[in-house]
Picture 1: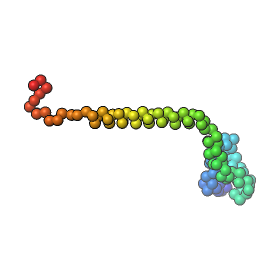
Picture 2: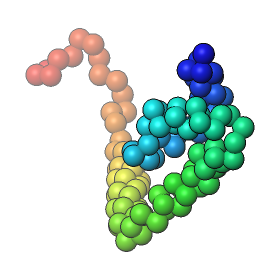
Picture 3: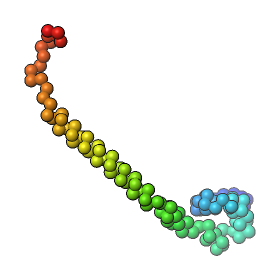
Picture 4: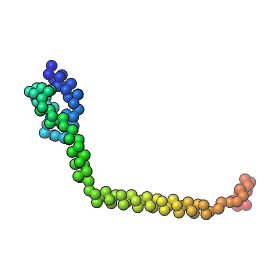
Length: 113
């Protein structure tokens, strides 16, 4: 009976899954033992339900960003965009400058004629 109640408790609190992913030393068995000892309505669960873990994950992600590498990638992307822009504008000028045949070639006329 307690096992089913714990499953329902875990379904109601998906924060437990993220807590388990972030803390490899904790597992479902240990959580079940805490549930078995303290029950649902104890302050012990506040440690596992804190929303600060998601905020710290975001701040940790930004702490690990190397700004020099980001700047290098932005510079490379700018160079590529400038190259594409040059090729498209130069290509457009040369295509407009070329004139095609003024009169269509007759169907009966071949290359050697």
